[in-house]
Length: 230
Image (cartoon, rainbow, N blue to C red; front, top):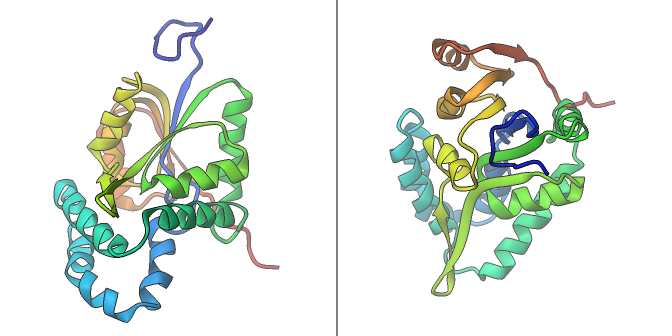
């Protein structure tokens, strides 16, 4: 038997994928959230301080997590947790087959790894129910580590923002201390890149390329796009 947490030669390769920007053309949480806020102008006012903080805290992971948690909790307030979770799962399932959202080349790549017997994890700051619905709709049997939601009192809350260094900690919690390959588009994922034997950057920015290469490991870049409209 192969030991998923072991490091012997018989073990499958461990492959880690970021989600937003690797599998998707846009941020999945923003794609779900934006139309909900447009339909509720008063809620936008309630969320405005956290939206501004989120937009300006990109280079500070702890601050970004603080603002993200408060933003999502304000969005969830006053709504039934089970309905929100079901809505997120449905949204994930719908966009899974939307070629304007999900990148076909990314799906080809993850399926190729699974066919080769690799152990695959998708690690994302995206919301857990959304990613769960997305994977289920596509029939992808992968490990998912994403931002966890919990019921507190009568409200749904963001309990664990899976972002930056927290991605590494979530993988460590399931026995993954390093990995053979990581796919990401984000400079925020340098903690993931630092643990990888090889990195594939998907449509990277100049900053992402620079920071990934500064870590010294093998880095290559690929360009994946949505299918053009007919």
